[in-house]
Length: 453
Image 1 (cartoon, rainbow, N blue to C red):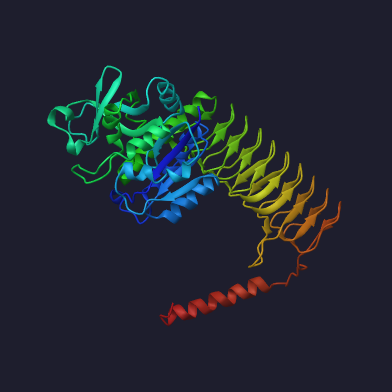
Image 2: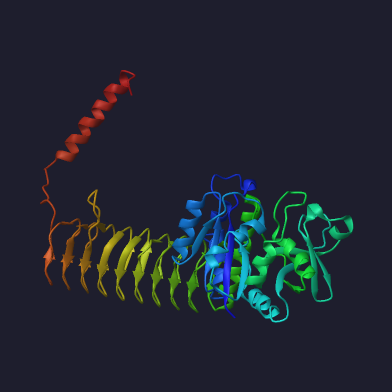
């Protein structure tokens, strides 16, 4: 069945105490809204509409960065969830089938739960996601049911004591027939304690018009909405715990799991080893058998099979390591392709570069890629030996089997097989060091006598 997705992302989230829209705060290196969009994507929707409001430009930028085909519509006034969903009607004109309504601050809905809601649509016009909570003071809307049918959703502030005693609560997520949903939304009013147009009112109105509604159950943790910094921190902890468990179950070795930080899209192959205090930013893939050593930071990069990275290494976006590459301590790699078996073992910066296989990059090597205005590229061939403390002033190329002398400043291309020596000739001044330090010490002693030290 065709389905479209609506993600509500219009609120400020005043309890976050932030200048930014709530849905742009991050879990696992991605905005809350992106997690909701990933959830919607599991249904392969015909169209996805994000309803923006506060900080609309920023929210739209983030949504379209995730998927350029997303449609953003603006809710000029925040008059309630029902009013927000109505803003998406014109954007979905001409599309049939169903609609799933999700929330940009609810990041943990599972694809399996959406599948269950989709299945429930076979027998009911409206499906609401609910969860059990044994807390009569919890400020969630309550779901009133008769058998398998959902009769009514009552907002907490409008609920009677008897209704507040119900343990089945409303998550806000709705899966419904599109035509029925928008027809019902046209019928809701704002006659309630908050003076808002509630999406939840569609259930009671649907029953009045002969439509059927039901509930699909989920855990409370899955339906968790983020409203405060404390809840954001708790959600991050829950995300990390889940990611670590999945990695271990997939055959990844985590030496100290509680110290490893994952991003929302981290992919690690079986038999990879991740040492303590490794941080994965977005966009990282690590192949089987690789080892990421302690205190390394990776983002936007690929690590090939059998490669070793770290300790204390940094891989930035565009770093592509082939199999059996060695990246050692205090090495930074950015926008560089490093071929099979090459070693960059110590204290080096490799940026905007291409390096062939089985090359050795000596300690302290720097690709000088930036001239203050433009970035330039360094190309190093296969089986090259780059001496320690070499400065490669890009654009420059080193041919296959070439070498540079230690301390060289390379400003011209080095042909295949050549040795490049680019440093001032050493001069030794007989006895000068001894005489110089004797003079310095005598001057210091004289100053100390005068009290000027």
